[in-house]
Length: 347
Image (cartoon, rainbow, N blue to C red; front, side, top):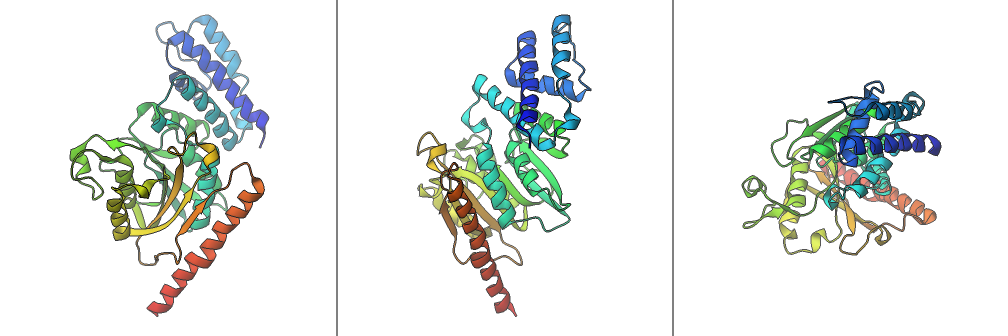
């Protein structure tokens, strides 16, 4: 992978976005969408009501000529786009629930998905209920996309700006994805997924009438969005499918957590929870974990021992390699052994 090519993608997007931001008097992220559409339209600058000006059109055309997408891998394009979105989120002061999932976390989630729920079918459906800019979903996609696997991607989000960024990003990477602008807690017209992966929005869900349809809703007041999203994920998983969710590290330490645990045990299995290193979070309160759930099915079983672990500092390469080996070992000695014992009991 070439850092030069990633930087070329980033600089092209950044420079052109800055021009369009000033010319059209729009935010950086809106300008990023505009410049992405220009690139997809054979590098043709869209002009409405005389804007951008002739001078800026010439400047944009010069910038676009720097970029030859056909010579850059889709994964490198994704990383260049990611850098541009990160800059835009800083400039536009995007709220925490809309921030992009860092690559370090996305790569770890991808490894966990590959280890615990690898694609076995001809087509593997991967769903993100809070897709945002798509970076987490695309990161996992490239990790799984090997051995001629066909990965079907679906993403839901109710923020049209973020969804537009996800669409532009996918198009520039030449990826096919089914993106839906919708409240993820409403009825969804999507096929059941093999795995659900989501960096869940944290907080209260404002539509109490809608929340009543969920078993994890509260009897009074607003319910937790992340509880409802976990329940929705289980609804749209295939039998035996897995959910991998980025959640608060103290998810099960609150008084309300019993309703969530009761629901999980009713429809599936709590297979693991991996707490992320404290070094990547500003405060202990903002620390997150990766929750691993499985929906019940004909050939499913509770792991002999739930995977409870804390990730070492991502900068400690040796410790991280050992940690990843431990996850692999858990899958072999706990999860697979439990499944084998169930098969023997059924004979």
